[in-house]
Amino acid sequence: MFKPLSLYIGLRYTRAKRRNHFISFISMVSMLGIALGVAVLITVLSVMNGFDQQIKDRIFTMVPHITVTGLAGTLDNWQGTANKIGQVSGITGYAPYVQGQGLLSNEDMSHPVILEGISPQYESHVSVLEKKMTEGSLSDLKENQFDILLGQTLAASLGVGVGDKVNMLIPQVSFTPVGVIPRFKRFTVVGIFHIGTGFGFDESYAYTSLGDAQKLYALGSQVSGLKLETNDLFAAEKIASQLENKIGYDYQVSTWADTYGGFYHAVQMEKNIMFFVLLLLIAIAAFNLISSLVMLVNDKQSDIAILRTFGATPRMVMNIFIIQGTIIGLMGTLLGLISGVLLSLNITRLIDFIQNTFHVQILTSNIYFVNYVPSQLQSGDVIKICLAAIMMSLIATIYPAWRASRVHPVEALRYE
Image 1 (cartoon, rainbow, N blue to C red):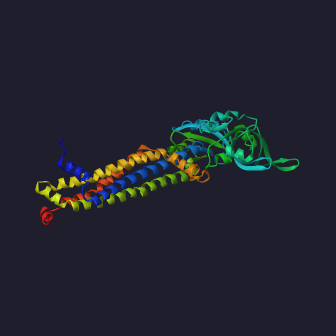
Image 2 (tube, rainbow, N blue to C red; image 1 turned 30 degrees about the vertical axis):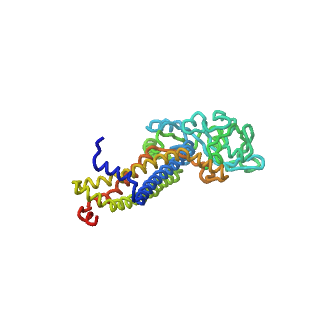
Image 3 (tube, rainbow, N blue to C red; image 1 turned 90 degrees about the horizontal axis):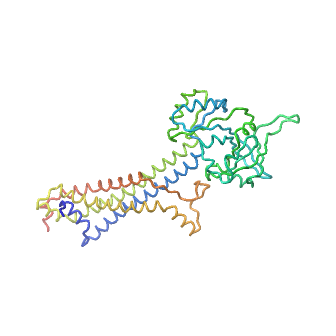
């Protein structure tokens, strides 16, 4: 089978192992270094993607993409406002809500909460609360019944379950003939939900029907605002700007970025920084590749001189060592790709095995909002990492190959 001479010799130099084992060892170290860098980078970015996905699942499935309320913190005629909002492109759903603070108590236990009045009919358009119910359902919230849904952690801390009664004390007062007394109401627990630890939904949120919340906070027909769902989470800022132009500036329009944007972008920035820092591992392996190729060029000077006397051009000599370095880079990248993909797909089980075997807890949900290592392998990251590794390997071959092309046959063969 016909092969270009430079390709044949480059492959031959890659396979040669009869002498100069040290050079072969350095080449192997360079290959393993590239493989290690690629594998580590793929694994770390997959873990970061896993955390990113957990944030999206636990925050943005519950937090509204856009919130609209009045300048005074309440909204009159929310149906009319909703009709205007529905004309803005990009908005896929809306739901009215009433939100206030309170203190839930049961016997000698109490816990501060954010009480949110919702309409089951509309709430499913903007959140996944119905899918997160572990007991009961969203439809169990009935008007004028003063029913309530509690987070799993909150219900456990109060020692209540479905069917039990809890007292809600709110920071408002009622004026009676006997004086000013705090306003409170007795609710019946009709459901338990579980969003997940780390962001306070299970510990600090409770839900009741929209009408009962309006009565409790004495809002009449007013609501606190409207929660909006968009077709693109990251286009919420742009859609919010269009919304302000549509409904006027008598409303307050805010997005998820105002509340959780800093946290989310911090995770994204950390992912980018980790990519560039770990990319240095591949760069270090590329420097080792330069060293091994320079030593190989010095060792093969007589061979290069003979090739030159037989008519090999400097470009052909350059191609020989570029091919050899590229092969080392490709093999290292391939090995790292396989290792990184396998590790990324099994990192969760591996960490669980280590935790169970050595009885240690590497991650705790109180700090990292999950008690396991999430991983999500993305093809875009894998392609980007492999291309970066191959490009670095190719760049690393340029100087040694250029040096080989500069070998003068007479000087190289003088002492042979």
